[in-house]
Structures are given as structure tokens and as C-alpha cells.
Amino acid sequence: MSIRLDRLLANLGYGSRREAQALVASGQVRLNGASQRDPGLHVAPGLAITVAGEPIDPFSPLTLVVNKPIGVVCSHREPGRSLYELFPDRWRRRTPALSSVGRLDAETTGLLLVTDDGALLHRVIAPRSHVTKRYRASLARPLSGHEGALFAAGTLVLEGEAKPLAPAELEVVTPTLARLTVSEGRYHQVRRMFAAAGNHVTALDREAIGGLETPADLDRGSWRIATPAELAQVFEFPRF
Image 1 (cartoon, rainbow, N blue to C red):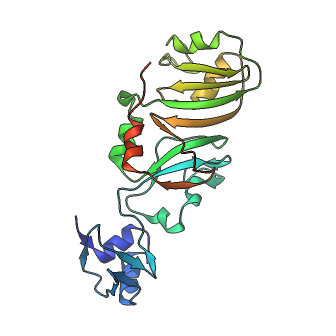
Image 2 (image 1 turned 90 degrees about the vertical axis):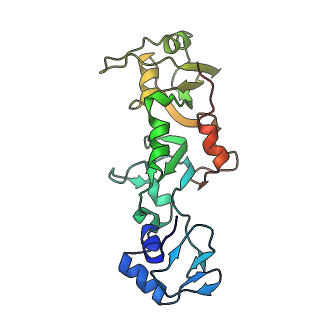
């Protein structure tokens, strides 16, 4: 679909509508190599557009794959370093806004999706989708051996809740290291599950969302635009 050039620039965070018009009028916007000074021109994806000599930011819908570092919060409002500080400053002004698909607490690292695609976000987090998430948990004490059955039973009720958790799958890696795959996204769920089993999580990393694993070439604190194949992998996962 086509959109006015000034509105596109404003939606992508290059400034207000008036600032976008001034940017175009200054000759800093080029279409297919030619200077464009008409802010009302309708443009569409596929055009080679540059702003101040740099390729224009990706159009919406935009989804990012992020390898979240420790100490970063997934909110615009929480105190501390924000996830959105990893991206270009102007992306905080994009319309529609970028939002994390679910959250990881500040001390949890690993795979995270960030998107401005509301339909995708709700499809991933909707309970009926049952998109699994796999975590690697380092534990303060050795596993006792009962945790796998406890988590798989579908009867575990976390403190302060009334509804049992859905069954989850535990893979023991070492006595103090385990992988846990869950199909829900309750508040601090993995940490609270191990606490209910009498243990304490000392480090937690999300390794996979559905069938999408943290890309091996994506360093901690890095991000890139998700490919269509990666988004499809999110909904390809084993059921248990």
C-alpha cells in the first residue's frame, strides 16, 4: 500500500509530520537516486529510498530477533536500562510502536522477539496458541530427581495462584543445570517452578521460542530483522 512520504517518515520516527516535511524540502530524501522535494508524494515498499544518504528504515510490519543481555528491562516504564536502547533512538517514535513479544525479567537473558505487528504479537502470546519456550536454568543446588515428574504432571500450583500449571518438560543436563520447556508465560514462571521444587535459579537463559532457537551468530546484546522463515519456525514446535 502506498503512503504519503511525509507521513511515512513521521511513522518511522524521523520526526513530526512538520519535521518530515522540512526534511524532504531540504533535499535530504532521495527516491531511486533522485532528490525528492514533494512531501505529499505517495510511495510504496520496493522503492529505493534514502534519508541523508542512508537507506530508509524498514517499513512496518517489522519484527526483530534479539539476544537479550542481562540487566535490561523489557518495558518503556520500568527503571533501569531499557531493551529499546539497543535500537536506533528514532525507533522509539515509530508508529505503530515496537513492543516485546512477552517479557524477560532484567536478570534473564536470551531469545526475544520485538515487533510492531500486533497480530503476530497476539498470536504468539495467546494461550490457545501454546507456543512453547525453552529455558536453560542454572541452579543453586543439585536436582533431587523428582522435578521432572512434578513439572510434567500438570498439577503444580504456584504460590499465590489457584490454577495449576500446564505440563512442562524437564531435561537434566548436569545435576545443577537443566532445560525446561513451558507452554505458558506466567510471571517469573520458571524461577517460581524451581522454587516450588525446593531449589533456586541462579542464572536463566531463554534458548527457544517455539521452533526458533537463538541464532548461533547473534551475540548477546545484538539484534537483527527476523526472516519469514524464522517467524514460521516460531509456530513449529513439538507438543508434549
